[in-house]
Amino acid sequence: MGMLVASGCGSNLLKYEKDQSFKKIDDFESKVKIDIPADPEDSSETGAATSTSGESTSGAGSKSPKTSEPRPTATPNPAEIEAAAKVKAADARVAKKTPPATSKTKVPKTAPKSAKTSKAKGGAVSAPAVPSRRQPELESEVGFEGRRPIKDPFRVGEKVVHQVHYFAVSAGQMTIEVKPFAQVNGKKSYHFGVGAKTSRWYSGIYSVDDKVSVLMDFETLVPSVYQLAVRETGQVKESRMLFQDGKAMFWERKVTEKHGEEENKKEWDILDYSQNVFSAAFYLRVFDWQVGQENAFRVADDGENLIFRGKAIRRERISTDAGDFNAIVIQPQIELKGKFKPVGDIFIWLSDDDRKFILKIESKIKIGTLVSEVIELKP
Image (cartoon, rainbow, N blue to C red; front, side, top):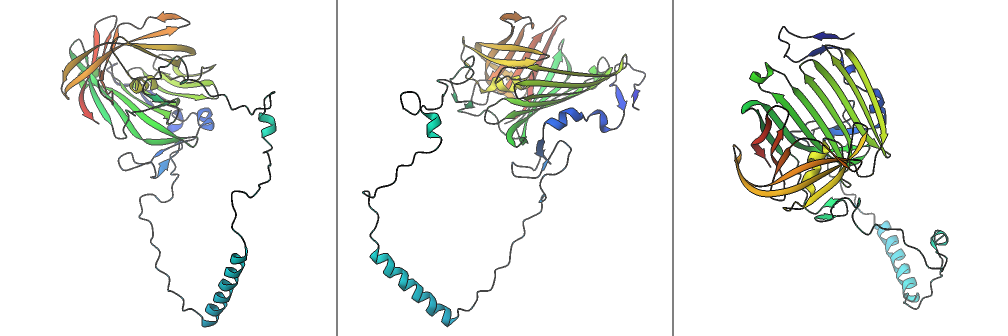
């Protein structure tokens, strides 16, 4: 059995002394296979990878490949040379007598078996239906070829660090990363990471050490998985979400000082091309943002199917600890069943270039304003 441990100060992180079984959610792991690079610092797409169980999927590891020694050349046998020459001469005589094929040569007309099933009533072969525009129609076509952005904003190794302030006091840091590509059920996927941790001073009020991993299909830009680990004052939580076969499946295992262990599972039907609540922050970056224009996409979260709508309201130049940037300011809104859902006043500053880094976030809450701004940027 596990044990809850908290020090005298109630603001400290809740610790849960239990084996790794708390982090392992068997139902989730039985439905998906995730292979990620073993060492993010040194790995590439072709490097060794680890699965959800942490086992390496490549036996080569970091060892150099063995080079084979050159084989000695055999000495030709005179009899074999003479026999080969006779065969070659015979082949030449046969080739001389055979006329070359011309365009007049009749080829038997054999229709493929599948042609019968593809004919329409008039006898013409019907082509498979192709959408006339990028899907879903809710989303803009500008800057895309099908589902892929013409200019991919993501680079492996990208890292953006934000300082988070509350009432002008440093509350902690947030890190946004693009990690080496992963494989989800055999498909190439982006691997995004976000971490949030409170400063030592603010941890005296409330402690946070949260991490989320997001996996998004490379071709469709649809998320398949997110894995969330929460370590905060009063609670420890592990969450998993999987988008598969038109359904969202959510698992949560939580321990709190007040209620002890709790488990939650949820499943619901989702619309095609939906984002999850974490992938949405990255998906924002693939769109072409112009002042006065709006971009929208689907989001599935907490048993509901929502619409994210963001409007570019202005361009401005901002000065940060990481440097000066041209930025475009986005104001997001959430729509549920045709009605806007209150989310408070939130503004997002994206770099006004092809990369669209998240430079700043400002969120007005019930008491005060949270401001997150870039202090370090590794493109």
